[in-house]
Image (tube, rainbow, N blue to C red):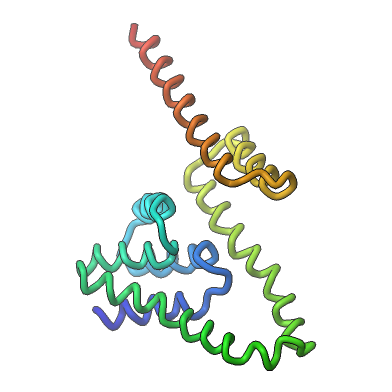
Length: 182
């Protein structure tokens, strides 16, 4: 089982370009397909790992490893996730100075950029579908993204506004439920 865990997360770490969010579809497919987590459990885990410090892919691998094999499983899954990236980054760092001005290297990096954007957008759309968000509810994330991208608003302010909006919305729902019961 440890070998399967390790190799699964090595594959995830090795074949996902673009960082943690780009890994989400691959992690979800592997973890849910193997029956290690249900889809709803994965979405809950996704929410939890976003709210704690650290690298998303490593956090989720640690949670999956812990669920399946406790602390040794956590260590094995974390190593499986980290090792490919570490080796690739080390290789790039050692060779980049020699090849950074190469036309083909520039073309490769320019070609990878759109793929990375797609790898980040897909899990966002998948999560929105799974949460059954209404079109009206999608306005706020899009507005937040536009404010960050076009207006240079700090993501911290967007997060704080989201927290305040979520609290106000929750209190409003509680008041509606209380009024219906009266």
